[in-house]
Each structure stands twice: as C-alpha cells, then as structure tokens.
Image (cartoon, one colour):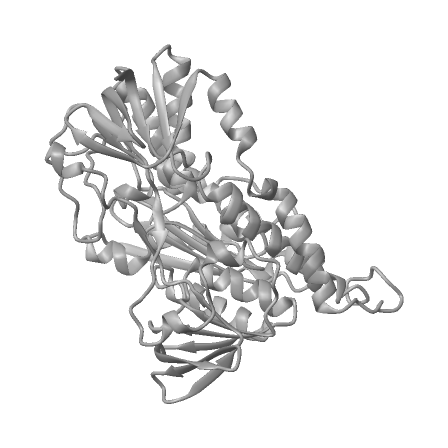
Length: 461
C-alpha cells in the first residue's frame, strides 16, 4: 500500500492547487484524476469559450469599421463558415488542444504523485484507484461537476451537445436550439449567432441569468435579441423527435423548432456519486453537494476537506481557487476562514454582465434595509468614444451600516471595472470614502460616481 500525507481526488483547478501547495510545504501528495490535470476550465470550458467570444466580438467589430472610423469603405468579410473555422483553430491553440501534458508534468516536477483513474474511498484512510490503494492522513475532495441532462422525451434520440462538446467540436450548425439561459447558454448563443447560425434560446424562467439583478438581465436578453438570437422566456422543451439529420423540438408555448443540433446548457451537478463517502459517514445533500464549514473542512470530519463545485458555495473557477487556498492553509496547520460576501460572477457576452454581493431583493430577504441607485453607462464619456458602449450599473447599499453590499452591471468590460465594487464590499469601505474616490477620465469606472453620491445622499452619509 502506498502512503501519503494528502490524497486529492480530482485534479481540476481546486485539486491541482491544493496538491501543489501541500507538496511545496514538504507533504507527500497523491493527485487522483481520471481525465485531465487542470480540469475542464483550461480545455473545454472557460478558456475556449472566452477565446470564441473574443473571435465573435472581433468579427462584429470588423463589420463596423466605417462606423468606428477605421476604414473609408467597409471591407467585405469572408463567409461565416471560413471565419468559424479560423476561430476554432485559435480556440484550440488557447486550449492547448485539450492536452494536459504540460500541467501533468508541472505536477510531477513539483513533487506530486499523479495517479490516473477514478478514486473511491474503500475504508477509512484508504482510497482505491484502478487496483492501487493509497493511504492518507488528509483527504481532499475536489471532483468538480458534470453537465445536467434533463429527462425529456426523445432528447437521447437527437443530435445534442453539452457545452464541453460544443467547445471541443469544429462543427458550426446552421441552426441551433440552446436549452438554458444561464451564463453558458447566453455565451454560446452569442458565439454561434455571430458566426451565422440561426439560434433559438429557450429559458424556463421569466428572465435570463435568473440570479442577476432584473434590469441587468433584461438588458442581456435585449443584447442577444439585437444580435439575432430568438430568445424565448418562460418556455421549455417538452419533447423531441428526429427531423432529417437533426431534431424537431416541441416547446411549451405550443410551437415547434427544427434545428441541426440541440445544446443542453441547463446547469451542472457535483460529481460526488460513487466516491465511497458513506464509508466515512459523509452524507451528500439532495443536490449532491458536500457540506463544509468555513474552513472548508467537511462537516463532521477532522481530516477530510472539500473545495470547488462539490461544495455548492459558488460554481466558478475563481471560487474553487479561493477555497483551494483555504484548504491548503488549513491542512498545513493554519486557521483561515472563507468569506463569500464578495464573490464576483460574470457572463462574458459582448457587452459583459458582472455582479458581486447581493441585489436589493436578496438583501431585504435577509432583513437588511437596502437602498439602490443606478447609472446608464452609456452616459459616460468613455462610452461615447468607444461607440455604442452603453449599459447599466446598479449599486445596493446597507442603509444602517453605510456600506456597499451589492453591485451589478452590463457594459463593455464590466467584468473588469466592477472589481472596484468587489474590493469595496469585501473591505466594507464606507460610502463616505467611496464617494471621494477619483476615477481617471474618460473611463467606464466613472459610472460609479453618480450612483454612489445618490446612495450617500439617501442614507445621509
């Protein structure tokens, strides 16, 4: 039997980070992974999707060269199919052609023992992987999540993609049905429509991006519609049947849609089944998540930790990396506590959606006397120079404490300039300080100034 100080199940962003940290501190570490070191983000999720979004945005801007003053006459762009093929070539370079060799080599060079296969706890203190038994003092569960596939009649009989498959394929369907209006569905809908695909997006909820501030979500829907996406809210697919080489979808509004392919983007579930957690007395929640305390230690366990999507705290790579730092510090003897009040989230459409903290409705549900103020980003000088760089910023403050508790925006590069609000919320910076901050002119960051002054006036700070 092989013996290690730390065994990490899952080599995604969280597991990889913990393994490197523990090895650097002199611990013996085994990192168990059945697929790729680095997880999905570098190869079939975050990185390739952002590469495709950048290509789609560049193609759109190329169609506006005369409007932006970059050409005296508008040049003719090549056919969408040729452009999409070039975007795929660039995407695959960014995603390292889905080859994890470099990441695997980095792990072994750092002193981590990489074990290929799926690990399962077979008895307390022991994980089995493809016939090997690994004894551990500390166990870290970081197995990530997998795409949901709803039990819809006929779905298994028609051509479908998960987002991972869409971002690994070179195909560009002429018609596409996107099921789901979250971040993944919105981003890929925009990518494909900008490369000439006729896209229908169905969302069962009244708005896209259901967790976002309502006015921001409404703007996002309009952005996609302006691009040509047929956005249908409060509509869902009820039944599928084969239609030629593609699919016919029967929707809840009584209509049918014929498409070459269906993109299933209805969320993800933690990959926590068949890990043998019952051997340790660890119970999973109904949604498959594993409960952890604020040290990221699994509840009821002294030497079992969890990080990333399996905890249900926040389904983002940056959240997984944050939890990995918590786990890394604490299993090495520290006492670090996680704080999720200022966990940013983003939808990387063009323009981007970004938010952090709580919206007004959520704050009031928690008994907070919340006040809000908004700003049209299109009124900033930078929006004028950019040409069509409009959007909206909504800020939420706690009247009693006089601090910012939430921010949401849609606008060019909002995922970047909203970081100011992340710092303000995490540091509980008083509004009296925030209203005195000077922003460079002309920048989108100036959009903060009017709503911050309005909030300060509302609460008398």
